[in-house]
Length: 179
Image 1 (cartoon, rainbow, N blue to C red):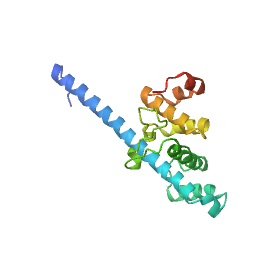
Image 2: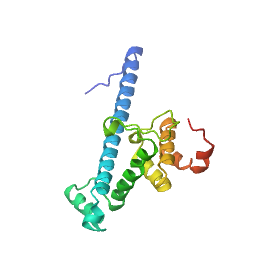
Image 3: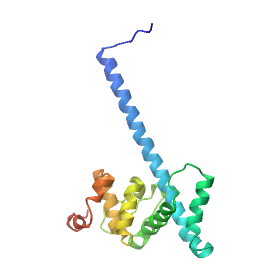
Image 4: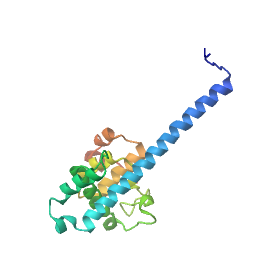
C-alpha cells in the first residue's frame, strides 16, 4: 500500500507555492508568445492578400477557395475560415496605415512599435493583444487606425478583456487624456 506523504514544513510549503507560481507564469508567457506568432501569421497573410492583389489576380472568390484549400492542407487548424481570412486582410489594411500617421517602424515585424500620433509618448505594439480584441477594433475603426491604436494602447495599459474593451468605445475616446 502506498502511503501519502504529507509535509507541513513551512519551507517546503513555500517552495510548492513558488513552483506553482512559476508554472503559471510560464504558461502566461507561452500563451503570449503563441498569440504573437498567430498575429504575425495573420499580419503576413493579410499582407500577402493585399500586396499580391490576390482578388484582382484570381477573382473575388479566391478567399473562399483559399480558406477551403488551407483547411484541407491543415486539417483541424483554427483561424482558416473565410471570414477570418478577411479579418487578416482588414488587420493588415488597418494597421499598415500607421505609416501615414507617423512613419516610425523599426526592427523585426514582431517587435515593431507603432506610434499613432506625433505627441504620443508610449509606442504601441499591435502584437501585444489577442486576436479577438483586434477583430472588435477592426469592426469599429476599420478606417481610423489612430483610434484603433489608442484602444490597443489602453488595452495594454489596463489589461482589458475583450468584453471590457467592448465597453470602452468611442464616447470614452474623446474624454480620455491622450498621453
